Image (cartoon, rainbow over all chains, first blue to last red; front, top):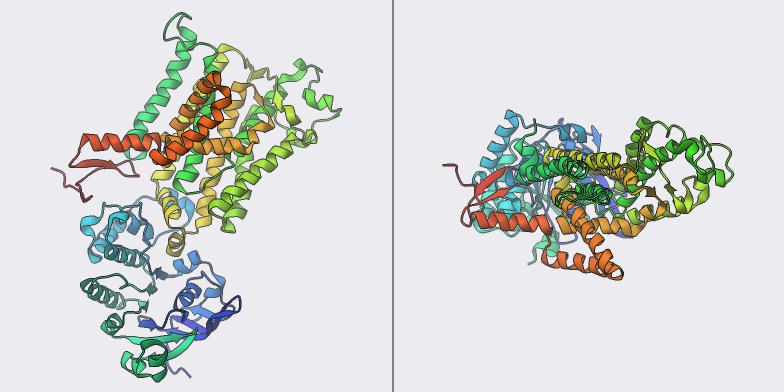
Length: 251
Length: 388
């Protein structure tokens, strides 16, 4: 039994997702604390993306519970937009930014604000918002590219822009799917730094295949297999686990 | 005060032309002697007015297709509904001058042996009510249709197909005599509008000027929408719908808003069209009409607003000319035009022209116009060039 008094930020309890008889998630339970960074590893088809889909409201679980902020919100009853407004941000595996918008407009659209249509129609940028966009541009190192269309950015820059957009939403929890995919070694190291910095003020869940990157992060690791948790703990402990070696790491 | 940001450079030119046309064409028709080379002949007035209505219809399609990525193949339905609302007002104005001289019932109802006016015709003898219905009828249909379609997340080609089904269903419904909209023949034989005879030169000139003003007003409204943050959200939805959702925008509400506004603009276009052509019948609901409108937008330049309006005028002027010369070949020409534009001018007339013009003016440091219509200097890498 859990002995801590602080309730976890995200709590998945015995979540199962069944697609046409295929169990994408099988009794998965997971708890993420406030300001925790967690790395999720596991072979293809282990259910990492489905888990993210459940948390962000894209997929409804067949059974089980998903709650946020110590049980205050039931994520299985909310749609993507409401969940995003609660403070859960998601970064996709392939960078998804608004290609036809400028870099700064991408951030502007993501900035935490009233999301209803009519206030958005009459929205005027405030000084505080402008300063926030400036500081985000600085942080993701795209200050010199602010007026360029996002489509013109390099792959690594797009990844960073998307992370910047997540930060602009001021989420309490960030879900990041393979942030290091397709990045150079230097970019990978920089991304690890950026995520660690972000995790100081909010919880971050990183799905990653790159073990070097996971080691770089230096956080608690959860290994998924066939839709449930196979092992959990520090990386050294998890990577020494017989079953993990068998199904994922290889000998 | 209309700012440069709202209009953009192209928009300013477009608005100036439309407003000049609104004033100069009616003046030339009414004031210049018939022999003058600058005189616009009487027969041309309703024809030109019709082009302007089509331009407004094209504008409304571009608002949803060019910016929100909703390819409507059913905007003709909203256009026709606006037209019917205006037609019903015009029918009620005929009064005892009809063939059967019934002061209340339009001729076709007397012919069908109807004894009293159906409830949905009530109030159409009052212009303000009819004017309200011109916007409300298509607006309401669009709202209900959009509410179901967008909430169920119907997108892409599936949505396009159900918009076709919608306009086709209305076509069949309006063909029926017992619907009470004149069946096959529709509504025609109009006499006056607001007390002015519809056929009179002065009325025609005024209707032309109003059509141009409606186009200008519709353009300003669309520009206001697309340059706002909501407009940027629409483009975001068009390019990455699920990303927009995960940022926290309720995509269906944004689509519903712009879809309904667009339908009302189409309805207004239809209402101005009917008194100028003198008839509204179910053929306006024909699915092919809606598809043709999409071609006008593609030819003029999708996502440029002004280009869409230009496409509406140019293609229809071409149609008038072509059907006069080789009527049986028109549909082939239209099809060929669509294929050629898609292949060789994917940005349409206006998009291609703007690209050529900006490229020609400054080869090394190009000035580009972003969606705000704010010109920015950039170098060849696309990075901003500091102002001297």
